[in-house]
Amino acid sequence: MPDLMPRGPEALMLFAAGRGTRMGALTADRPKPLIEVAGRPLIDHALDLVSGAGIARTVVNTHYFADQLAAHLAGRELALSHEPELLETGGGLRAALPLLGPGPVFTLNSDAVWTGSNPLAQLRAAWDPARMDALLLLVSPGAARGRVGGGDFSLDAEGRLHRGGPMIYVGAQILRPDGLAGIDAEVFSLNLLWDRIAAAGRLFGVIHDGFWCDVGRPEGIAEAEAMLREADHV
Image (cartoon, rainbow, N blue to C red; front, side, top):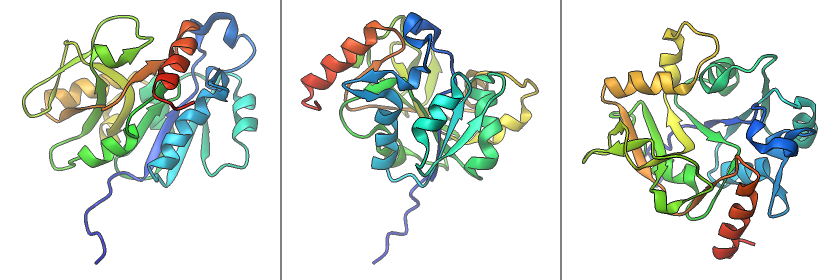
């Protein structure tokens, strides 16, 4: 008998446009998504997750050293959304919507490495469009590596998110992008949309069942490789 349950979003936005300034000299001649962890570029680690979750359409935004990213990604089944000027996460997602198509989308940062279950599959399994306009993936401080700073959110008993608290957003979510049309700014963070969604009681979170490493700084490379070794991924 065919599965009649909805599978959730079928499109993903992979954020890869930033300058990677926290990487210092490592991004002087290449974009951060091409920095290698365990012998492979960060963006390839991210695309493995996309493939593993069976997502049909992928859009990658580019800006800094866009030609290098385009060359690296040539021949793959994805689309590029080039930003002549950086638009941040909110503006970048809105610019890519014609390529992503209608309905909710996944978004994923390209500067992290994971262990445990596929984070995108976890989001798909927890997504409830009747209650949610956004579902963010989180980890506790003990499951985070390479993180500088405190937490981002707390969860209530029903899984709704509230600003402030120990839980860390790890750059993976499902989002209904309709609200982007009501934001006047051209360059803006998705935090602006999240706050509007939270005010309506439709911002939710789910906790990742493995570890996550932020590879936003040079020292994050070694931390990510150690985390992968511990999980027998390499």
